[in-house]
Length: 171
Image 1 (tube, rainbow, N blue to C red):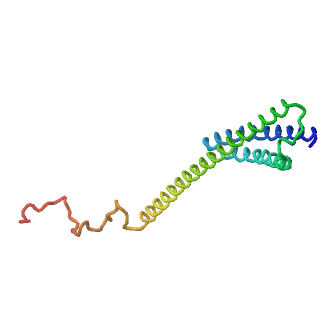
Image 2 (cartoon, rainbow, N blue to C red):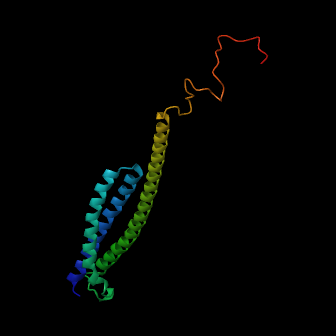
Image 3 (cartoon, rainbow, N blue to C red):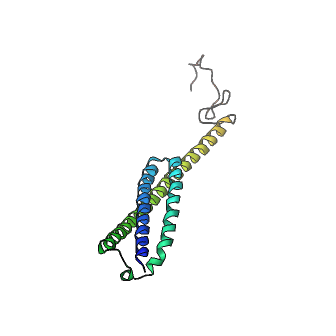
């Protein structure tokens, strides 16, 4: 492998690092938007994030031939250049771990949010059904908890005229 190839490798590691830094930043913003319930902004962010993921895939594809090569076979301009590339590759590994962790956390946040919204929708649906049933019951003549009927005896008693009491009866 020539020096040019190791320079190309260093450039690709740099591009990978830039993609991971951006994905990490977008992941933090994603978490904030999920917590705030800003679904419109979240969808726009996910669209931008997909572009960075596509860029990352391209870089990973270009890095694939280097992964099959033994590192000691690479010719570097200097030992410092090699150390710098190795350090940036290690930073990439750590950033990738953070990005993956953040993705899992964001997924869990979205699942919890989805479940809360589903519970709220179910509660609203059941409340609407109960209200509809109550309203339907109220519309039926002679029905409902507060309607005893104007001319219907209550509890089987005959209507009485209370304006004149018969104080002479035995009952």
